[in-house]
Image (cartoon, rainbow over all chains, first blue to last red; front, side, top):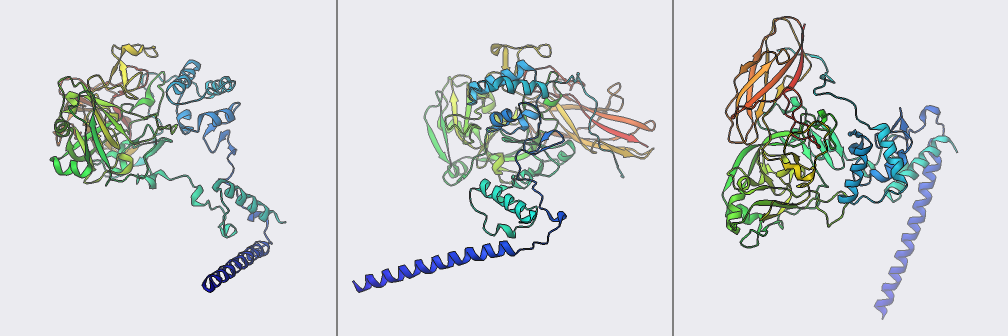
Length: 150
Length: 406
């Protein structure tokens, strides 16, 4: 019995000590936060590079690489949860091709019924990712010239 | 409150929301720093890849080499392309890994641990060329759907393992066996556990070849996770999708295997040639078997400027699927004339072959060096895109590099 009381006493004092340290610690953190350098000029402003998931630069939605145009939100929401947006941006298809791709994903890849969003998504894809004529062989592109010493 | 504090607090709030927990000591974090928990995984570190490789897709991971990164005679891991249909499995334990042989045409269902396989069957090592069926897809017109591979989805590494044939024979093959189909532990993109991302295979004649391995080593080390650790089927010379990764079951089928990516337009081409853009019915599509003859100039990197009067050394590799390369040529005049150059014999069947030449130029100016291999049956690489097919497979048009003489 005595032993138990002793145990209970120790337990209570531990809880108390822990609570005290926790509250004290929190005060300390708040103190640090309030007193940190407050003489910052405009140039000290923290850039927010990664945190904004909706950031657009030069007409490109930075997080996904998709072109910023009507329907972007619907495409991001419906087309980038299973695969990356790179599978969209790499490809070029006409209306029939994009619709066939959506059907294939619905039949075999667990894509849901897009409802009213389908027309918006297909319109976005056809407007921004439609085929360019390449011919049977394109010119060599992206050659970076350098001096070769042998 | 000063704006800095406000911005920083807002930022910390955003981080905290994204991480689902408070960032203790968050105010001590350096400006511009992104907590590791929020950083996008760097594929080059993650997969130990050369940072000059091209990431085509980060979900699922698809990464290709550039021609000049493939200059090694045996491809090291850091320049080997990465092709995934699904999500790379996690928490693999090689000690508890098993391989089961089953199927309608298996005499019995039999399960082996990795140590069983290694102890029971003889080990073999081969250099095997693995090329993605869609390598070169980016050139198709009308464009073909999928990852837009250029030239870098090919490799030739050393693979060590046991012969699939020996394991199949140990389990017992019935007379009506037609095909083997693999099953693996990668996860479908939708994370639906009922779905397999890919389950392909090969006809018995390929399954029973000497060089068709159940491999546990790549370049003398355990296979890197992204390339199929701990067990990979390796079938050189065929579309690399036949070489299933993370294999835990092989079914001996009495029909042509019908797993995902065996049907429709996947890894199949029109049985008869079609005009570009033609719609082809499923029943008119045939499964790709051997890859076609092809070559790559791996030195120098395209874009070399050299001094007048100097000769230029070029080198590279050539391969021909099931066949060997019999002849190698290059052209500096857009294919009007071809100059033959020596090509080495393969290290073993299904390994790529090395070629080298010393190229002279008649006068200053812009040149393209084109490479053309011919296989042992006399079929050469085309100079333009070969037969169009709905998914853009089998582009073996000759490789080209640009050179300037000044």
